[in-house]
Image: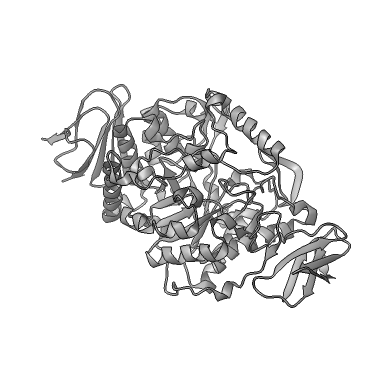
Amino acid sequence: MEFRLWAPNAEHVRVVIDGHEHAMTAEQHGWWRADVPAQAGSAYQFRLDDGEPLPDPRSPHQPDGVTGPSQLIDHAAFPWTDSRWQAPPLAGGVIYELHVGAFTPAGTFDAAVERLDHLTDLGVTHVELMPLAQFSGRRNWGYDGVYPYAPHNAYGGPLALKRLVDACHARGLAVLLDVVYNHLGPEGNRLSRFGPYFTDRHKTVWGDTANLENPGSDHVRRFFIDNALMWIRDYHLDGLRVDAVHAFADNSARPFLEQLADQVHALAGPLNRHVLIIAESDLNDPRVVQCPDTGGCGFDAQWADDLHHALHALVTGERTGYYADFGRLADLAKALQNPFVYDGRYSAHRGRTHGRPPGSLSGHRFVVCLQNHDQIGNRDQGRRISHLADLGRVKAAAALILTSPYVPLIFQGEEWAATTPFAYFCDFQDPDLARDVRHGRKDEFASFGWSPDAVPDPQADQTFQNSKLHWDEPAREPHASMLQWYRQLIRLRRATPSLSDGRRDNVRARFDEDQRWLIMQRGPIAVACNFDQTTQQLSLDGHSQPLLQSDPAIRIDDGLVRLPPASVAVLRRS
């Protein structure tokens, strides 16, 4: 079997297989190579010069965690059953984001399979898995991964992930994976021992940035791009969500993000499958999804947070942190028509002008949400919006997300207003690092005015256990009614062409800032929302037929809709 390693600073390298060492031969550009008898299941490491044996940076499996040896696997041996599978288009999709460890009590890939029928009944089309790369300990959000090629061992490892993907495809569910290429976790991270994977010329909140433009950057880019291709080729994933693309520092003529998107798309042809790549971006910059010929990166879609911020500030009344830039119905109305409220507009929170107009881009190029892991977990107690606002307003906000011209994303448990929080949790083994993380979380929330004493200990197993979904809740009220609301909205979206066409130019929104009502119209569908504490009687454009209503006291007659406090009606105009 051929072993290859990029270690440009080493004078000699040996591969250690099942305890036996074999010298590797130096090749060009810092690469080393050896042909050694080995098979799937063999444990191996690399010894640089006379140092301690280290796991493979491209390790396919770390059965004993970040400090143990790597293990070979045979990707061709898995009995896939999805040979005729094609992912549904994102244009008509609804994404469901989940954390494997907190999705079920067992917190494994195989346990997640047992809950897939819930997702098909809900009506979602794409399952988005939070990061799976091997991290330190048994619990983590996944953004502290240190072996990007190795699915986390506590979730079940490579074979179990393939079983989950195969089971999703059997039920018509596409699978996306959140990948993290802007940084690696602090514990177990040994990439710098092998070569210049990172540079101190630029800094992020996580430390040094990935080396994408300095000497050796060709091979660093290859490391991350090959990882992206592996997930799609060997694990049959249908696409990737690339974390925090705004954190990349890259001034090269051909940006890494453009190269990454191009090679992901190029793989679709040989595989005869649709694949896509989505960016998380805080830039409000349409160039992320514009084609390279016009100076863009060529991503299929990007997360757009302004609709979330506008809804959250309006529904909860919060005005701290970045919510200080939102809270008016005018912001919400603009966000329903334009993915960027801040599209070249001054942001008081940032103290500068932010964003760029999206032009005529389709709504399908933007992913929006009422909740996601960041917006829940990056709070003092990991509280959901259903913990912060009454369910009537939450239903109104959900209706606007699921009838918007964008691609909606739902976070696990949102669909039934889960009582469980989703707090930040980790399991670092270094006591000094654990202490720093505890203090860092408390300090981070100061700008929101939250008490440090309210922040749960991220290192405590109980914080993780408290974040796991309770699957007995959907059968009880008020959770059953909320779940039915989400099912009806998704069903309506998928059955109504004007709700899934992505046409932003067909969105109309009128509102009254003082009386706190808003009506959004998309073709024949109107969504009338009352965010106030008093009953509102609103005029409709002609006769309308009620399709969905959050409150039985809603009345529609003679071109008028009477909305009780904190309610919403979805109507079809004649």
